[in-house]
Length: 123
Image 1: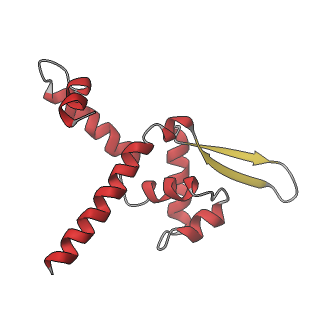
Image 2 (image 1 turned 180 degrees about the vertical axis):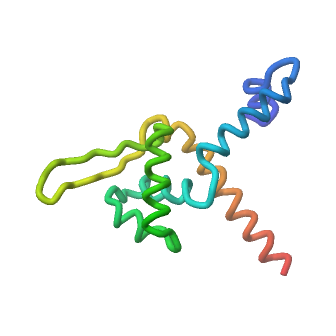
């Protein structure tokens, strides 16, 4: 599907700029910031335990990861499962809702790689 077809499918006729801006703001609120996409990427790469997620993301602090995971759980992007063993086992997994924007994340990775190459080639 081309850009024009995607646009026709998503955008209303006539265009409602307020609705479009609100939708963009909602998206940025839910997945925006420095850490949410790297956390989703880590989870999609098989990291389920807090420490594994933390180790896979350079620069994230324990406090920040904890805060982001709670917020992402509240937005139904991930599921937190507690197994009451000794010691308690806590695992995080992405939800189907989170996976629903997997194509967007892949396109962002693709664009980011292309952008980095474009900047390097301009040097």
